[in-house]
Amino acid sequence: MTPLKRGLILHVCGLLLVVASAGAIGWLACQPAASAALMLLPGLGIGAGAFLVALGLRNASHAIVEAARASLREEFHLALEIRRPDLDDQTRRDLFERYQGICPHLRDAFRESAQRRRRDALAAATRGPRVLEVGCADGGITHYLREQGHDCVGVDLSFRQVRGANGGGYVQADALRLPFGAGTFDTVLLPEILEHLHAPATALAEAARVCRDRVVLSVPLTKILDPTHLHHFDRQAIRDLVDRVPELTVAEETEVATFLVVTCRRQGR
Image (cartoon, rainbow, N blue to C red; front, side, top):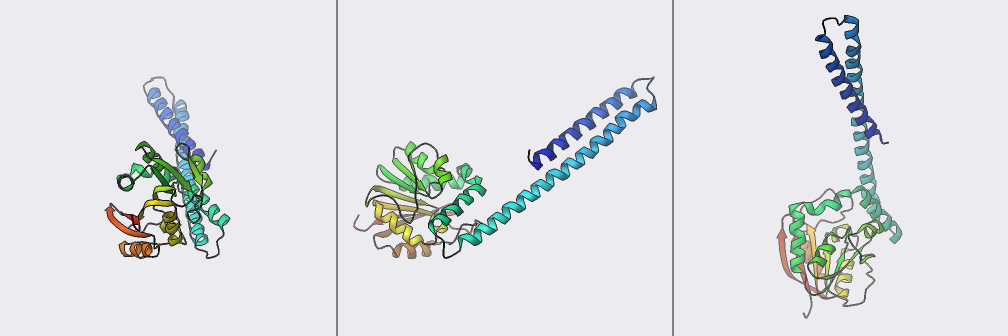
């Protein structure tokens, strides 16, 4: 049992004891033959209950503070480690496994209106039956596109995410080395992935290699306190990044809430 649960149980038991003792005092007060000594027992119960209430609150609050401190320490260390210039593939994968472990909010992302609008904008820009989502996390966008009739494959660096993704058809893979042949997909999606990567131009070039028609990406326009964000992109930074990939040209840019959704077309399409 966790310290937080123990603290909450103590707190609830104390409340129940206080309520029961107060009820006993009320009942005894209505009895003409009740002695002062008899009234002392529920009085002691109220005192003991109040002590348990205070102890439970103290222990629960201490557990919450310790959990928050541990999470902040983990995020701080993760932010430092992921910025090392000498990361090998296994270390990068391990770091993103840790990231998924401390960011359970990713599973609930599309409960937010802004995130749903971003997802819908990505879906609206998707063309063709064959689609690849790079950095699929738990498959929220991939599953959504399948419901729209696309044959969508999701890839993620994290084994944790691929194992727990929504439905089948997911692949553990690195955005910098996609395990697909040239022109395999009509559309490749990079939803909020580039800001996490040491080499975003390499990932964009890989997406261009495996697509026939277009690459659709999204990035946050506001700075987010995320330990794995290595870059912040605005409109000009995205244009400069796309300019580094000769196969692609920016076709459309759309601001959706706090995100920028960019559609890139392959040259000659």
